Length: 119
Ligand SMILES: [Zn+2]
Ligand SMILES: [Zn+2]
Image 1: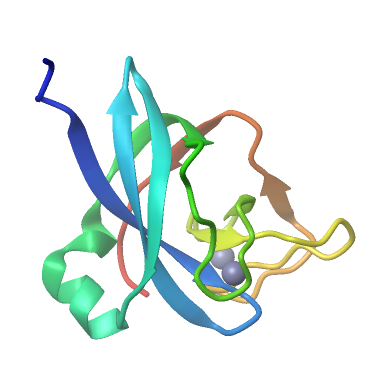
Image 2 (image 1 turned 120 degrees about the horizontal axis):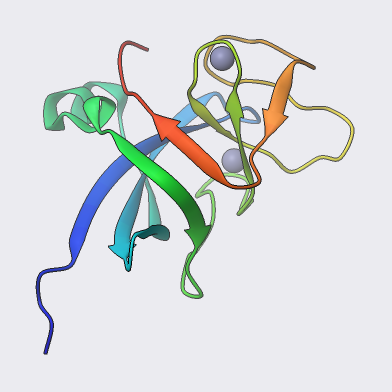
């Protein structure tokens, strides 16, 4: 049994509710999988250091991933300005829940580089 699974928690923000949530991610053979999303207070997330998490590589939803706790979306975008992750559940309108940037946010297809930082 392999028990050295590497797991981290990253933060995403839901544009619908303007609330953040934690997403537990697991590294499996060099790729990251989102396995569980849960609502969290910004202060607690900061206290736990979740806003400092850095991961790099592909980020896939695992089969068991439950999606955003608020809007249920399993898709996300990474903002081209602040680099943070937001839910994405609409074809037309893409917006960053963190800094409010709209339009110029690229949908993630493959590699991401989560840097953490202030929010
Ligand atoms: Zn959402
Ligand atoms: Zn942004």
